[in-house]
Length: 109
Image (tube, rainbow, N blue to C red):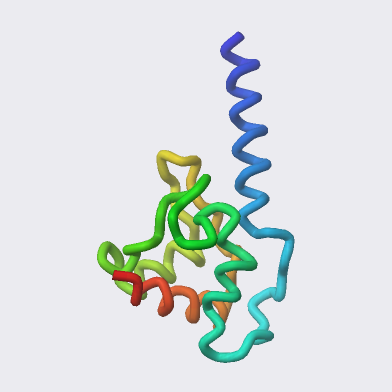
C-alpha cells in the first residue's frame, strides 16, 4: 500500500513540475524585449506560482524581493530548490530571460 501511495505521489509531482515550464521554450535566447519579465513569468512560471504571484502548486512570490535578493532569486531559477511543495526544478528559464525575471521578482516587496 505504501509503495502504491509513493508511486502516486511521484507521478503527481512529475506531472505538476513538468507543467511549470508551460511547454514553451526559447533555450535562454533573448527572444523577448527588455523589460518583458512579466511575459516570461506568465509563460514559464505562472502555472505553478499563479498569474498574480499568489501561489498555486508553488509558493506565492508576491513579496519575493522582501525575502530574497536578486542574486538569490536568480540562483533558484537556474539551479532549482527543494521544498515542502515538491520543489522547483532548475533551468526552466535560462540566460538573459532568467536575469530579467530575477530582477522583476526582486522588486516585489
